[in-house]
Image (cartoon, rainbow over the protein chains, first blue to last red):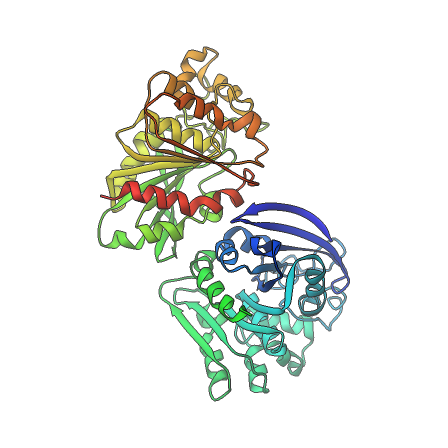
Length: 278
Length: 278
């Protein structure tokens, strides 16, 4: 692991690191905020998965997470959203596929399958790296994310319910297999057989029996992607009658941007910290 | 005034606006955060002046000011740092002069004097525009800034003591007439006669009798520009024996970045809000 930068912030250290990823077959960059409490004791880990077009840097710059993370003593990990590099195939004409649009799946189709393995990267490779290099208590992890990253957080929590204490999302893509901006990517990464998509779709996973609690979702009512992209009511419907504690909050007048995310970031971290307590 | 964007954030509205500036003879862009309290009553105005290379956007994205501004009901105005545009002269080889480096002076030298009039822009033209277009209580204003913008905040407060209730700065250039990264710009904007620079130099202004209180300065001890650029001890020395209430806080391990600014932004706004109360 190579240190790209470290800056003191809110009493802790905001770092940016890179490493040669075996899961993605390329160098990967990620950000970690280490709160001051980590100097004294292992701290719980909260994973933040970003949305389409983002790198690790967007939420690091605009997410306003450090104050609450420092208050509660929580490590925040912000991975990239896809593999990148000269040797990684891409579709430069699309912002919904390829670089910045890994969708947290392990691709099965050529030529994407060699690099676009964000599911394995986030669930297997990066946790090991965090455990080895930071004063992290890996027995206490939670996960959240925005939009495509909200989809990532929900599906990863539903598939790994014993690993995470809580899951939250800002305007998540609740059913990527049918949403305009994601179904095309699912087909290209995973093939045309839609059965293979179900394990990367929060609503399908719940229909198929996956259970995770608690889940907190904030969704802005002025979000341009509300009707076609995020559709929180599909998640609410899927959770009905299942043993899932879902809190869905419609936030009046908020859009899809970091101006929205940062407004509720503190509340989400407060909520996760409560569940991450020993 | 033209609205470029508005986004709901922390209960208020973060807007970006542009207008044809008569002071700068070009279109100017600025950001305003209007807290939710402005729907009910006029709110005080806190001016944030940014540093070298910045536009209105850097602090809007990375400054983490909206939570505290919404809590206290304070309007935050974030101007650009220079005139810009195809018809504005620039020195593209320098990040310390021209675009992004207006230094909050009214240039007297050709070819800069037609556009580089940031002092008049910030003190005369933009306040009128804010008063006309926002629910602002202009009888309650304070000012702060970072680096070059800290210099701007200090000099503007010292020259307009009756207008502002309080002034603070993050790592300000305390004596721009002698600092490496500013003295060259002073010469090009204001001419070689250094007597003309004194009115744009906080230490010189204080020596010449200007008084402003209270002043709060935060300075990181790991700031690469501490020894040659910011030099807070010069401000402290200048204030000795003068009727100026200066609080200088050396912040251990912090650098010159927005990771530093955002760490103390909430405390600065809390402090200004106390002085902006009716």
